[in-house]
Length: 408
Image (cartoon, rainbow, N blue to C red; front, side):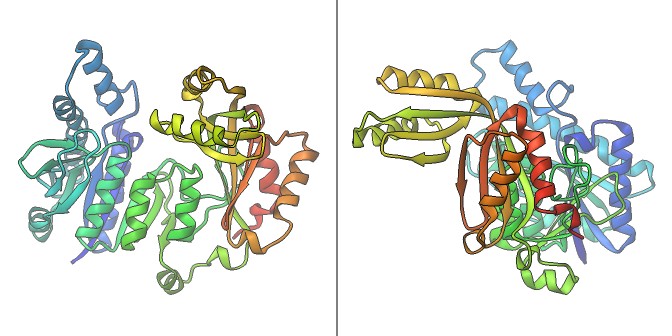
């Protein structure tokens, strides 16, 4: 039995037309000889009646002190509704389909409500349905603890459900359906000439996603990377097979090109909604340790850290900027706050061994009169911080500078 897991996010199932497109993808897989398992998210995004954020708002607006156990029970209903409706859509197409909740699918978690970790998967029920010719529709984002308490998996939980089920069922592929046709050289909404990257290794894909590409949640990507679960990032609106994410050996068998072998840069990712801090240290070596301890104790994560003898520069999410400012100023730190900002990352391979990448980036942005606020680099990325108003222009300029439109 060849099993395929196909995950459909909230924006892929929130209208009858989109649900039919999703059902046709499952039908296509069935006709190709696969035994399909669908994993669905709650329908729509914030504001839609059954979206997870809507359910959270409903509960917290009505009851100020709703406990985490009850909140998980409430939030799990969004995916259950979505799974039932998707099952009915499949049946209208003449397919045998059955719905199962996360716990009926055998997803066993710890008892951490709101952000549970999957401990194991009992696949007996799913396999029994597949052997009878059913398409199994699983409510994503949820499971149950050992003692039967309903739990949810946190942000990106449906992606995690899909990857874990793909691993447990030894699926041929886990398809992640998104609003783009695959992992691209840049966001096509910003760079219309952006190209699809037909094949990526786990390392390449993980780096692009970590730097801001929102094609799959990074927790799910890390699981796929660790356990070598083959992924395909696809679109409901495209007939192609999207981007295959796998190991080098599988890439070779598929006849796909490994971009890291011959390109310094093969994708541009970005994160927006950031704020930059430049904190004066007054020549005291212990200031930087104190500053980092203060922020760590408040649970604040920082990025793009540059340390100099008399100043430290770093970035936080814009929504946390005023809180960070208050914390540091209370301790007497002098600082400059710049926001909104965006982090743009050139993703490639062997950056440290290939001179000229930073020079080309700086030249391209300077010629376009785009101010660089900060930079950082690693073996596979070079990132720069710019004003949010310059973000789209900077991505377009860099895409042209590194000739990513020529990737085929």
